[in-house]
Length: 92
Image (cartoon, rainbow, N blue to C red; front, side, top):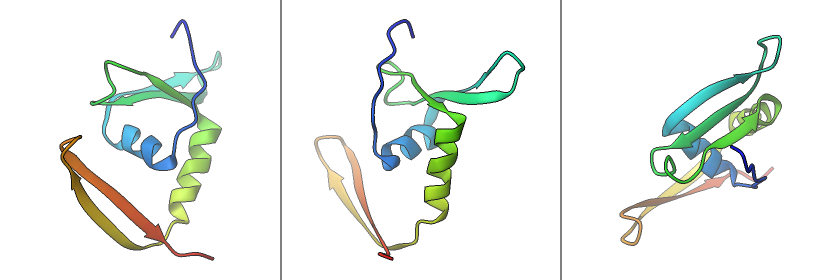
């Protein structure tokens, strides 16, 4: 936390970090209003602690709410010992 780094990430990575969070903490300002969240998944817990401002998270939640998947594929990846999921959405 002493050396913050701005990092862009795909929406799917953000959702994964939050859904599978090992750490999820609310950040507040001086008036105790929520202004953001600290989080990381079980896999990232020893590598990174992410922070997102409340307004940015709201944008991502809106994106998810407007996402209409039409097909998904699940492929097991031996290198990571987990599935890679590919979701296809409707084009407007």
